[in-house]
Length: 327
Image 1 (cartoon, helix red, strand yellow):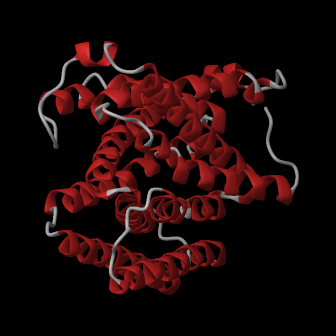
Image 2 (cartoon, helix red, strand yellow; image 1 turned 180 degrees about the horizontal axis):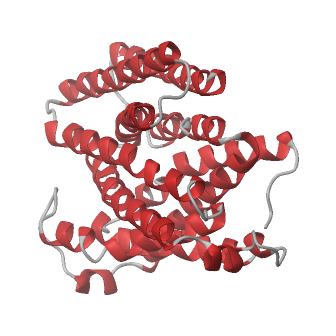
């Protein structure tokens, strides 16, 4: 099993994971006339396939107990079930995130959803395992909350300028963020309790749980969409080849980022890897503002809120990371 043997390689993998997590949604933004509920089938297949490929390549460089197949054979069934459960929860959260992107754009959906996920993840982790500097954690959570509020105010300023405000989009992102903060403890349990799963094994079962749960979550949203009319599977088969390819590519990008983050955590510890990975919303916001021009025509006030959002988000990540390492 490949794991980083120097801090430089680990840092590269963590930064790459943040870029991947903050960039995969560009593939959906690049799709024309293709509903996100249909795009998501390709995406879900992509995250699973790339996890399997990496498990049988980088995760199987040796044939010792840590190699992918041997690790799965030795792992507790409870840890496998825990990781599959994490995938089911993650998938609902991610579907809502894509819906939020569809309604509000990258620059809004990502910071709101993942900012709330950061808050929920930190608070739930501390309740389950009171570890780390409580004061720094509280300050980090406060900064994350402020960042989310500022991002919401930036969107409010933009929406008022265009004459409409979508409360549904913000609520969707909030629910996505709460769910995003819930699935991680299941993975942590699988990687730390009993006969554990390694990072490559976790990625495979996490994405398998996500793919299988599409039969419930995605089918539901196809029948009861948050935006637009219901769609059926015939639309998937009539979809453009570019839409299918971009969906698979988006899944592969997210999957690579996830595996890199999990593998890097073996060297640096989960706290540091998680904190750097959580800079993904800033990457997504930059894509939204600079490339997709989601704030074109916005008032200086809206841009001011965005700038402050970046500042408080960076502070939140630094404080949470410092609190975990200090503890």
